[in-house]
Image (cartoon, rainbow, N blue to C red; front, side, top):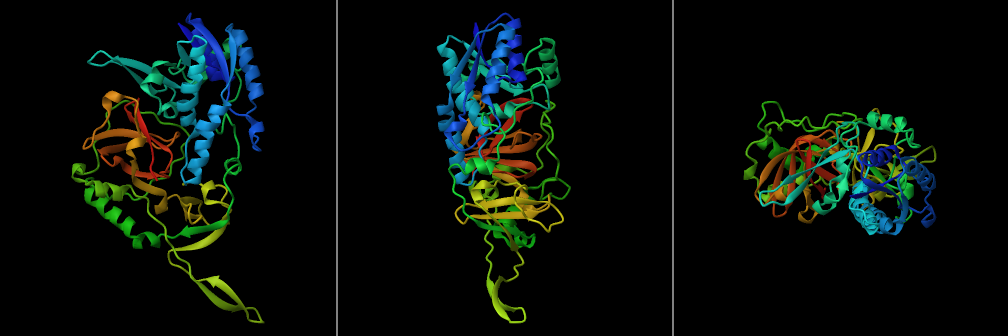
Length: 461
């Protein structure tokens, strides 16, 4: 059996190659170049020439053949262009998820098979297993990595059965410390190499600078939303009334998510998910679920007034005070910002941190709120459109009318959250047990049964 390892020059893929070689497989290494700095004015700190050099040294040390492939055209078309389009429409994509689906386990897999490889292996921290279906077919399963601090299953949430059939993850049962130890004992050149950061294959760059390659900068207002707005907002009040009517727990229903730094990924303990805090959800109509999944709209109008200033009583114009909000700054393009963001806003004079709670791309307005407990930061329900639902386990596909309990995460470094999934003709609705902070259109919601990842979908706008 011939295995092609995607050797990046990092310690994880290096140890993956070493372990496979030690197990007696016919192993080859292939380094993929997916970005050309010369293609744009952007220059990241991802020096692919150095990475390739280290990867070649690793292959030589292990004693395996080394190949090079340029996939930059496919990467630009399938990942980068998609990113630009998503941001232009007010959504926040995850390029690492796309890179795995479109490049590493598609374009790269094709190149690997062209040199006779049966499988591709990567340095992802996740585990793959198989089971035999009742009719005799093989079903491929993917589980969280053993290391709760490094689990990368989220990034593989869009892989298909066909892709998993050809994929291997040799370090999924190891911790990062064990990987470093193995690399050091084998004296691999990548043993002390730092983990890569930033956009997959582009590097750690300033995101607005990256997006400005194609998206035009247009100044607009930053509007701070006050708490009083929600008490008068019809959709917010309707959602609250519906949810309180469904709430089954004895304690009051919380409206906002408590703040907890997502410094580590907390994997599931494998135990069954606890009971739902909601009453019978089967009574919910499609219309009610649509109401619950809608983001609260922001439409705060500011009127102007003329006043006289100074000794000469010069006429000036100012905005009248508004109980619902205030214009607190200017930005250079609403498409450059994402929900939950707090850096780069340039807003002072607040006791607590200020966060982006919504963006209005057509009107070019950013809405912000002060404090972790701001109502605009939290939501309970989201929707995934029918064409955006992806099941890793085709034997577990939900059908309209089905309701299931799973754990979910809506971004990579988030502890798994209890939720109820309701499948309808209009899409998959996810109602969380607790309010969720920063639900962001364009990101992937990923659901798990215990430690097994079952599927994912793009959060609808």
